[in-house]
Length: 96
Image (tube, rainbow, N blue to C red; front, side, top):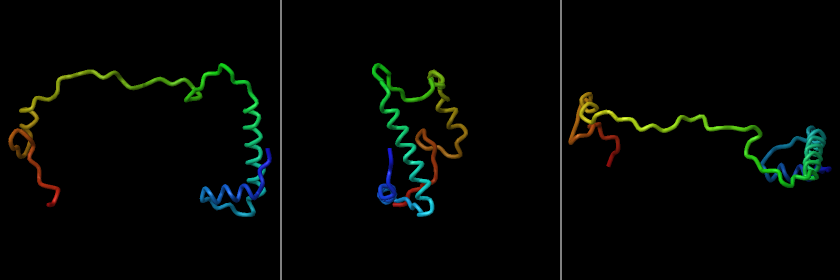
């Protein structure tokens, strides 16, 4: 499939890309080659072929969630420089 220089300029304008005239011939050939390859792919019989999200099989590498006991509330507050009503007391960071 052939793409024209006018089409390239229009696409460049719409995508806010600068295409210099000295690169136009090379870009025209490259884009035409890509479109020809896509046209070839469109001719393939893909009946019964499952769509895939990735080219290679992947699996989840995360570990399973395991419930564990958390740090005791009083033990956590024992290291606090200041504590108020069972919470860490910190300097105010939001101005009114």
